[in-house]
Amino acid sequence: QVQLVESGGGEVQPGRSLRLSCAASGFIFSSYGIHWVRQAPGKGLEWVAVISYNGNNIFYADSVKGRFTVSRDNSENTVHLQMNTLRLEDTAVYYCASLIQMLTFWGQGTPVTVSS
Amino acid sequence: SYELTQPPSVSVSPGQTARITCSGDTFPKKYGYWFQQKPGRAPFLLIFKDIERPSGIPERFSGSSSGATVTLTISAVQAEDEAVYYCLSADNSNTPWVFGGGTKLTVL
Image (cartoon, rainbow over all chains, first blue to last red; front, side, top):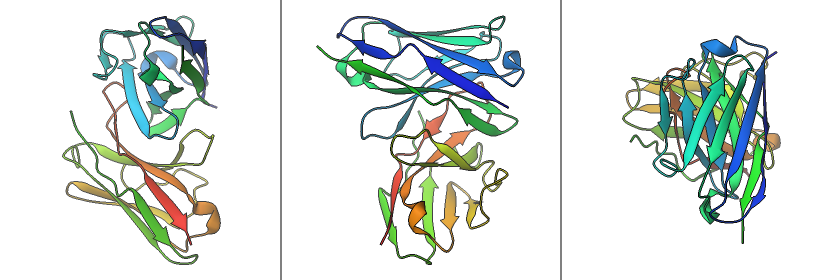
């Protein structure tokens, strides 16, 4: 079955960097885009970024544009989210997700805490 | 960028029907999706492509669409349905998604 597993979360100081990973299995990874969605404590879901199936199209939310970079390795069935210049407001649980045959699939999330 | 509008809260008594709306210019060009989220858990898909139910979702959860609004209807509400419900606008896995702000369903 489809599985998405995030890793790499943790606590980091403002201005520092963190790299999240999303490992996928159970579907033809190279055929589907992968999204990152985050949820700050007590807040709603916020779409962060998407990378298309072949990596040629990448979109970011305005709140992370210029600081976050998403990439994928189709040989490893993995997507990465490089987060630079982190801010307090980037504190959230980060989910990777995909839309596969019109159904959405989500990972369990990885928490990121930006704190001094 | 698009915005999707949901009511912040809806309250119903057990056994009644709850309706949660989601409005935005992105409909009906893109499909509506509905998720249920309970504390500490990832979002759980209830409705896809406006009206479709994934296997295993009870029939009392239904979706509808009219113009720029999609609606989640929960019939015969149960205490376990108390959660936050989010709508999503999406058409494929390669373009940006837009979420509604979420609706807290309280079962009285």
